[in-house]
Amino acid sequence: MPESPKEGQNFDAQQAVENIAAGNEKQPEVNVQDDYEASKAFSTSEIDQTAAGSEAAKAATAPKQNLPEPEVTNLETGPDSDPEQYREMARDVNPRL
Image (tube, rainbow, N blue to C red; front, side, top):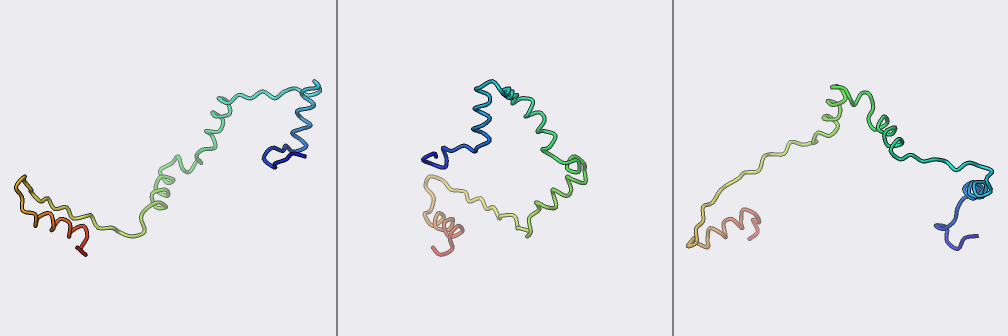
């Protein structure tokens, strides 16, 4: 019995390894590229490839509430600016200041 469950194999896997080693069973061939290409067929459904699917996706992912656009104010500051301007900017970000 393995010391850790992570190190263990199930009985079928162990039997397959032993049969391959004994020559009773052929080792399976793995072609990752072909498997990847075949998996692409399952990546999207037929409805998702149509305009109806696109509209359904937009409706499903649309925000539940309308958020207002942030108000942007540009405050011109120069090297000899009034420190009170910076305090006003800080109050815009954090009104508790």
